[in-house]
Image (cartoon, rainbow, N blue to C red; front, side, top):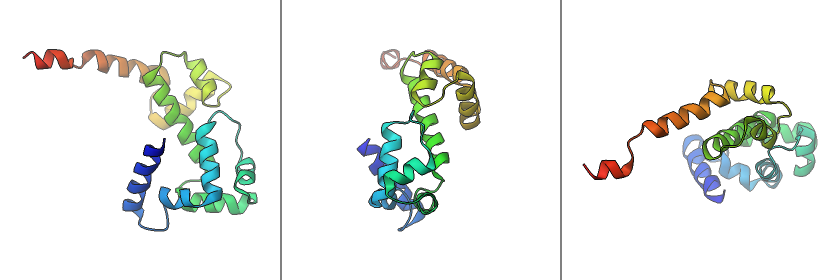
Length: 147
C-alpha cells in the first residue's frame, strides 16, 4: 500500500504541481486519516460527516479540503476506491459477486453491478469473464520461450 501511495504521490505531483495531489493530501493529517480509513475499511458505511469526524473537522470544511487536495469529493473518491478494490478482487479471486459486493460495501449485488458498470462500462461478471478469456488466449511464457 505504501508503494501505491508513493507512486500516486509522484504521479500526481508531476501532473498537478506542488500544493495538490496525493503528496499534499497525505501531508494533511485530517485528509490522510480519512484516506487511510477508507482504504482500510472500504465496506464501512462512510459518510462525509463520519470522515470529517476522523479528520477533526466539521463536514463542510472537510469536504472542501478533501476535494481540493485529492481532486474529487469524498464520496466520489470512496466509490472509486470501492470499484478499484472490486476490480482487483474480480481479477485475483474466484469469490462470488455477492461476496465481492459485500466486501466493498454494497448490500445488494444489483447496486454493486450498477456502480461497477458505471465505472468500468461493463458488468462485473463480464469483466471477470473477459479477464479469464484474455488469460487463456494469451500465449504462455513457456511456449514463447520454446520457439
